[in-house]
Amino acid sequence: MPRNSLFALALSLVAGLGLAAPARADNGLHGRLEFTGLGATSKADSVDAFLGTRSRADLHGNLRLTWEPHWGQWDFSLHYVLSGAAGRGVALDRSKAALLPAPPPATLFDLSDTLTDSGDRQLTQRIDRLSLGYSTPNFVLRIGRQALTWGAGQVFHPMDLVDPFAPNAVDTEYKPGVDMVYAQLLFNDGSDLQAVAAPRKPAGGGPISGSASTYALHYHRSIGSLGLSLLAARDRGDWTAGLGLSGPLGGATWNAEIVPTYEAAGPTKVSGLLNISGAMTLAGRNATYYAEYFHNGFGVSGTGNALAGLPADLSARLLRGQLYTVSRDYLAGGLSWEWTPLLTVSPGVIANLNDGSFYLTAEADWSLSDNTTLILGAQAPVGRRGTEFGGLPASGSGAPYSAEPTTAYLQLRHYF
Image: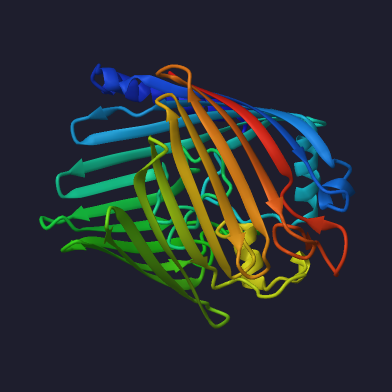
C-alpha cells in the first residue's frame, strides 16, 4: 500500500472512531518505543562471511502506537508500527533474501510500506492490528487483523499454526497481526470453542486459495484437575489435528501436546511436546523454571543435511515461518531468576538431541522505572560443522555453512 494511503487509513480510523467512542481513560492512545543495539559475528566459513559480512554492529528502532477503545459490547484495535534499522546487517538480510524464494503472503492484505531500503539503512511502516470486535458473556466475534496463540509450548509451538515465535526470539510481546475472522463460544461449564478463518492468496498471487489459507477449530475444557485441548484445522492444504493435556505435578505444571498433520501430498507427520514449569526459591531469591522436549515430525535425521536438499514440506514450513528447526528431537530448558526486585536474570539452552549441537541464551532485564526497561542479552550457537547449530551446508557437503551468528544486544523499551 502506498505510504500516503497507509497514513491516511490510520489517521482516518483514529479520528472517525474516536468521535464515536466515549471519553474514558483506557481508550487513549498508548505505545512502546524500543531501541536495540546489536553486535554479531559469524564463523569464517559461514554464509554471512561468504556474503561479505562476517561481523557487524547494527542499530534498530521500533515505534508502536496502540489504540484499543471499548464502548459497550464493542471494541476496536489499531496498532501502527514504524521500524528502522541501520548497519551492515540490513544489506546482509537483503542479500540473503535474494538467494531464497519469496515467502508466501503471511496475511491477506498488504498494509505495509517501505519508506527507505538502500545501503545500510531501512525504514518501514505497517498497520499490525486493525480489528473490530463484539462480545457478550457467552460469545466473541472479531474481524480484521489480529493475533492468535494456541498451545502451551514454552520454546516450541507445534499447535500454534498462525505465525508462531521463533525459539530464539528476543521480543515476544507482540505477535504479527494476521487478517482473520475469529469467533469464540464460552459455555457455562468453563469450556470454550474457538473458530478461526485466515484467508490468504497463493505466493504467485490470484484469488484466495484453500491451499494458502488456514481454517481451524480449537476446543478447551477442564476435566477435574486436567486441562484438555482439541484442534482440528485445514492449514495451507493439509489437515492438522491436535490433542493437548495439562495438569499439576507437585508444585509445578505439566503440558503435553501431540499434533499429527495429514499432508495432501505425502505421509502423516506427527509432532509433539512435553514440558514442565514451576516456581521455586534459589539462593534465597524467587525463580521460575521450565524444561521442554519437542519432536519435530517434519525434521530430518543425521548430520550434514544441506539446506538446499531438505524435504519440500520442511522447506515450505521454514520459508513461511511455521517451523524454525530442521532436526527431529530437541530439549530446551530455562530459568528466570529474580536477583533483585528490579533485576531478573534469564539463562536458557536449546539442545539438538540428534546431532549434539546446542544454542545458548542469556538475558538480564533491569526495570529502570514503571515504564522503562533495559535489557542486556547474548545468544551463541555451539556445535561442530554439519550440525544444526554448528552450521549446516547451504548446498553440497562443505562451505559455506548456514548458522545463526553469536550475538550480543542492548535494548531499551519505554511504554507510554
